[in-house]
Image (cartoon, rainbow, N blue to C red; front, side, top):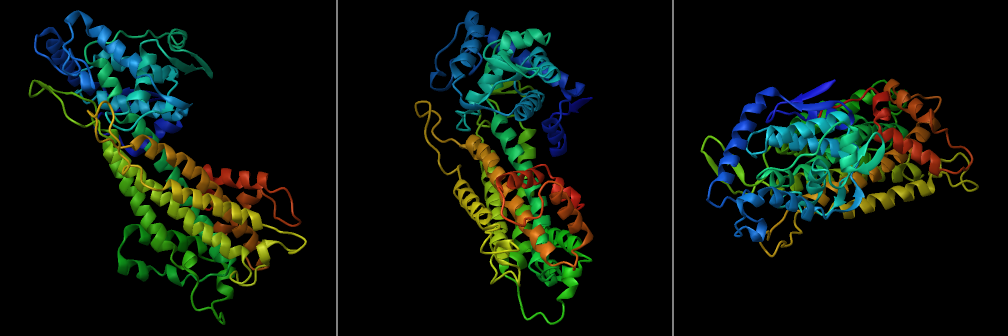
Length: 508
């Protein structure tokens, strides 16, 4: 199967399919005319005598240095090699595929001046599975993601390294094994490949999708916790949320109300319950998680725009007949979106951790045994599992501090304000993994609490969620080595299987 992208019109669903799959990715044929027209304008500029940034000049602080026409190929090659300064761990291959597809989308708008052959090589690499090895550190998010994208471009000229058929090769050999040939970069092509926000945007998109998966899981684990402590469903009454009007709050309330519908546990304490109100971590789930939902959708809208944007420099404006320098490479929108996602992820974990603490505390859990063990004292049950969630919650709070506020001048003060979008986006992976575990432990506590309410049963959707958990994590009786159980529960959050078992799927 081949995924065909129309520049300027790719959706989040299109991009998610690229990230999760192995399909070939190509640009729609309608993009060819604009690509060729921009390349022709660059070729004319390269043949002329006027200085045009990135075509026949140096770069950054060296933009005033005119380059002889015979040295333009060397100029572009040197640019790529000198900018391959990335450090750190290799970017995940799925994210690398996404980054390359985003670069295709940008080049396909016909404002970058690359030749069609350059576009075809990226398409060929995606089709054959030749994925450059991209170190994940070294970008400050302006002037674009220079270092990581340079490692991508290096593989295209046969330098650096690339993954192919599960092995790491010198890039030239990987291309040859795939039946592809490296290119010789033409005027401006090196600059077009490394200027841009595609690394930051790809990482932010992956962080967005991970956060949404966690959000869906939290709807389910929050409902499990509510039934485990015999919480009230009164705060889910639709009129409450309609009066406030926030779309996310309304949607969350409806989703959780459906999950709890038919619970015999809930019906058992409608009368005679001396508690008037539940703690906020139960009662205010729609308000908190609905706000999270709205924020993630806002960030998603920003990233969808950015995914379709032209973000290199200079830009080739064919209709105007000019090549002009601007600042679209500055990744501030991506950095803001990543910071927003980080806050959302932190808040999901903050309120979920309080529900874990509620369930293990016998003074607050409405008659559940201490630490959810049937034999407290001799057994500690989920005591330290709760402590682990507290540690991860605190770590995520620190990681949620904004990155975009931490600009620093680079490149001899030419690039004197930068976005820090790259690590704003990269840190989302760590935060989502932490949250996977917080919610996994909540699922363990919620299932244990629900089982203590027997013979009363929870709702059918939540029974299905408990059954999914129990397929890998047995009920906790006597104390046992819990780390493997936590890992299994974490995995069910991360892969979405717990939410799917409950029949929950929310559209981003």
